[in-house]
Image: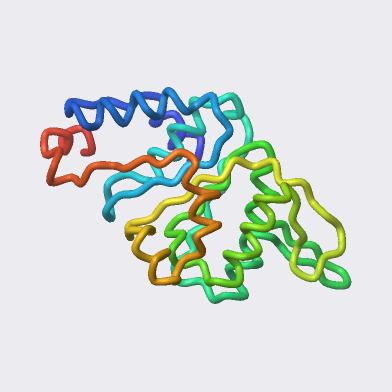
Length: 189
């Protein structure tokens, strides 16, 4: 099922000038490993865009791991991202599962403040630790995140960490609202 989904991403068919510009930007950044922050309203194709960039990039054969941060408790968010260890069990998190590939963090604004700090540290140091783990794990995944909210406003209200915003916002992509590209709707059906 996932292979069929990925095959459908090979083409990024557009009829709208704004979407043509988005496709050109995606192609331009595919070869880079920099972090990407994708903005746009609900339903505009933020995850599809992230998958397209991953599929066209040099690490397309590696994993694309999606984490939907909405609805997860603080503890669950940390375990989903970093994994965890107990006396007889190791659970891998998204950052480890996506090694050399892409970790897509959907709805990044739902990430709690403490886990934001841990993610910043991992991005800066290029290593992270599983929850309750002792061993440093290299961070080799490209991180792409999406948001439907204006992160500048959240940063100014101190509801989102400024350092995380700058770590993620290396390459910002804004996807136009569907109402601005009605001519594209046929392509979506």
